[in-house]
Length: 488
Image 1: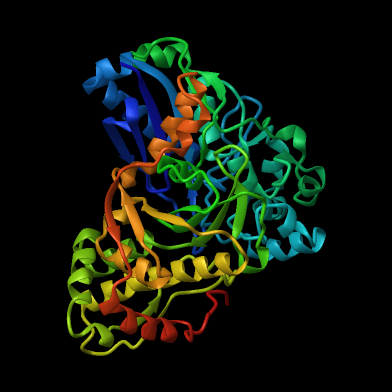
Image 2: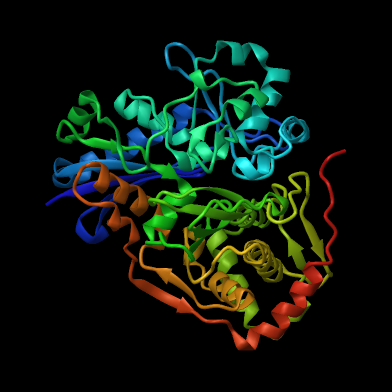
């Protein structure tokens, strides 16, 4: 028996899953991770939180799945993107990482655009406060001593791989999210780095996602009962990993991921930037392809917000929303834009706040829950429309991530996109599967063709004819909602 591990380093938690042949799930361990929000709009995690969670997951697997770990051949990583990790000369973190949804560098986006007016056509998209380069400019203004002390800038999964192997490396899917890399060539760009006040000698070497980027350290191997010499793949950004996890590796293939955020991921044959619509475009984890990403900043994060507000569990709210959608009261629900962390695609308004229209005394919790799920679906439809209008090919779309467990979100999205939507088996672990597939290639046990393999379909959703008219009428109202700023 041969086994491969996929690490999924998310915002709200870390999952480590073990897979056998044909992506058969053997075991999963998970640890929740906290996000620090010291000020409104700030979002941080200390890198050691991720490492501690990975260690706890492997400790759990080592306690209950010794045979699987004894057969481990490779480890791959999927990582939340855009969070710069600054390391000192001893390779220790200097500060918490500013996460992908951190909004403090808003003013620096305009500064960066003024320095490099064509940056959106060279990097992964229009400047956004969540991306690394504007954060560097913010830190230069507010924490210059930290930048002076930093020997190296890594990304979240690359820091975890450093702790696993002792090796420093990155790959183009994650590096493309920094705005320091020329996405067409896949190399660090001296002009882009200079505009952000950084230098290429303080960045890791860029390799391919599926190559071995180090060997698991012997002390970890002994602790977890893993054979010595296990390869650790370079890995991929989370959107790319979950996309190849369901076999979306050919132009037109897509995976709509619904997690803390939601992303419409579509594979493209060429680098096809769409900065005017705030679509991100970077290298894909499969050979000779790029990934177009339309981003919704708050998806299940919005559901978590409503859960905190009402005292109900997110799963209960999702169930209430589904039952409400089948009721005669559907048209009376409020119309909501749950942009609790700003708007990216297609509006590029990171300062935007959420909006609810149509609140009444009769509005109850199920109506609010429905309006929230519908609002996320409306934002996903806006992303897809922006990508389609720019010529990004759409052919075979899957739904992945934790939100794929909802019975309502797939119906709403399929109806709005007017296409069939498949939910693959194991969709909630798609990022782990993608990471494990990269590990298979890195370990020499498979060719890159394994990245193209589709998962079996668990369920399929066609556009809902009964829901369509009411949904599109409400979508028309949604599009009239004002975009209000959270800035004062």
